[in-house]
Image (cartoon, rainbow, N blue to C red; front, side, top):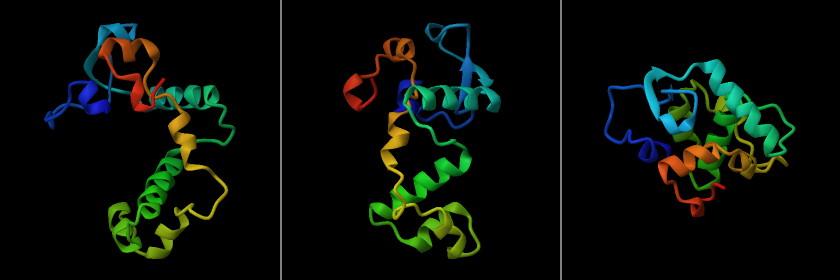
Length: 129
């Protein structure tokens, strides 16, 4: 959804995640990459707004992706290859299907600020409010 809304479909030469061109979302995206520190600031802000008290880090996203893949019928061996793990035992560490953590926690984090949704004319029916 981000790729289409940001107009990046088919663009393999420029940065995927870019900073804003100005001080507001209405100014669009620049040609500069989004700094990692800014990305984590956004993730942490949206985590708090969503009421998620657990710390979020790169392993959280990795575990969510692997768990969702396996939960939807994916094979451990393929998940291992996608994750670049030498051993399936390492991949199993990221499998949270048996945890009491709800996978929908990530979906409660608003990725797009309201002003950018309006600017990009993103449909709110896609689960983003």
